[in-house]
Image 1 (cartoon, rainbow, N blue to C red):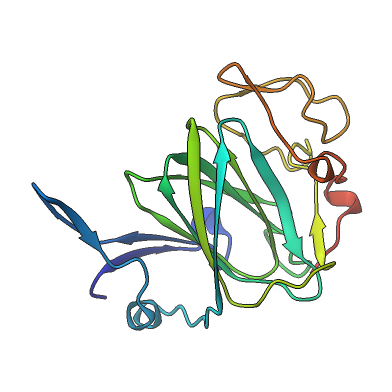
Image 2: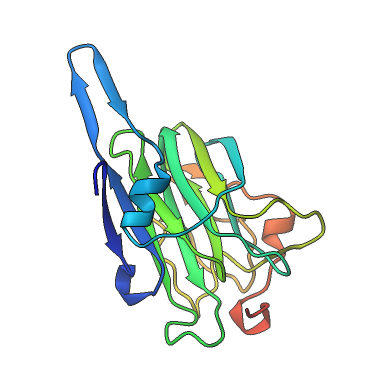
Length: 201
């Protein structure tokens, strides 16, 4: 592989991959390939991406955990500004790691990419003052197809860094803080249920 190193099946969860690109830098700055279909294919990753998305969020924003039900998507995510903790939860009913999660710290400094296959719930927490988040998808967005699950379900037990607060039986952000900043979730993300009541692939 020319420009990437790939760690596969993170924490034993089949399909999750961390991709570390080669960064070529000098006193003027740096250059890197953010995506190469050839290098991905050589690494055994055969995904046809069809859409790129980008978002900006402020510190304490948590987006997730989301998935598309009838039109699931593989995502290749990275951060171009700031720092986020990115999480995937296995919702594949036939998977030996169903219900298990893995998180990656994605930053503008480490430039890592996180590959999340179809069949996972996905979300991230912003740890820096602001963060710009980019991701590629292998299917288009389909309105009214979004599902979700509680970001703080104790049965899953995601260890969100820098987060303080106590679980009170729901996905509400009330009483949670990130470095003293109130946790910020959309109204919809505060109403998702736990994994026992969540869609399975």
